Length: 314
Image (cartoon, rainbow, N blue to C red):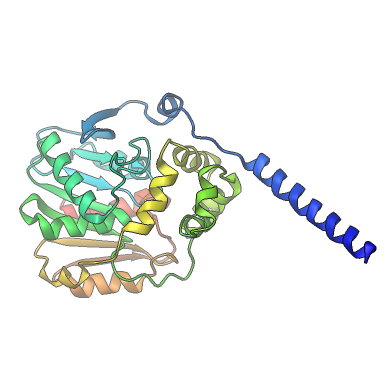
C-alpha cells in the first residue's frame, strides 16, 4: 500500500510539473496595442471612430469610384488577408478593408454583443461614417455570412455580392482548426485567455490552407500576435457562443449579382456549401479552385482575384 501511495504521489507530482511547465512555456499576456500597431498598422492604415471603437481601416484606390469594394474577413483573421487582392484591384477600384470588431486591431465591441444583428448595425454605421452609398460587398467565411445578410437587409446599398468560402448554412465540417475547437470548449476556453501556444496557431492556420507549405512564419506571427490584442480572445469565445446560423432560408430572395469563390480543399466549410449557395442565389456564378483551402484569397491572390476581375467586367 505504501508503495502504491508513493507511486500515486509521484504520478501526481509529474502531472503538476507538466501542467505547470506547459502554462509557463505558453503563457501569453495581451500585447500592447501600440506595439501591434507599429508592425501591423503601417501606411495606409488608419483608425476611424465608430460606436466607441477605433476601427482599423485601409481605404485605397481612386476616391471617385462610384461603387467601391468593401472587404470583410473571416473569424480570427484581419484586413491583411485581402492584401494580395488589394494590390491587384486598387489601380482601378476604391478598395476598403477593415478589421471587424472582435478581431485584428479594432478589438472588442464595448457592449460584448457579438450577434449577427450587432454586426449588421455596425456595418450600417460604417457605411454612414465613410459616406458609402453603394458597394460591391465581399466576404470570406464569417465575413461572407455578414455580407449576404447585409445584402438581404440593405439591398439598396449592395450593387454586387462576392462570397468567398462563406459561412451561414448549418456547418458540417470535415476538420475544424484546433484553436476554434478550444475557443468553443466551455472548460478550456477561459484558460486560453491566459495561455496561447504558438504551435496551436500554426496548426490552425495550416489547417485552413489547401497547401500548408504556403504558410510562412510571418503569416503565423500575424495571426498569433493579432489574437493577443486586448479583448480579442474573449471576443472570439463570445462570438462562437452568440452567433447563430440563421436567415439562410431567405437566400432565394437575393436579387444581387453574385460571385461565389470556393476552395475545393476547404475542410472547414466544404464545397457542398458553395453548391448550395449557387443553387439558392438565382443567377449566381460559382468558381471553384480545386487545390485551395478556406482562405483562397490569401493562399493564391493572383488566381482568385482574376476571377473577381472577370466578374467586375474590368
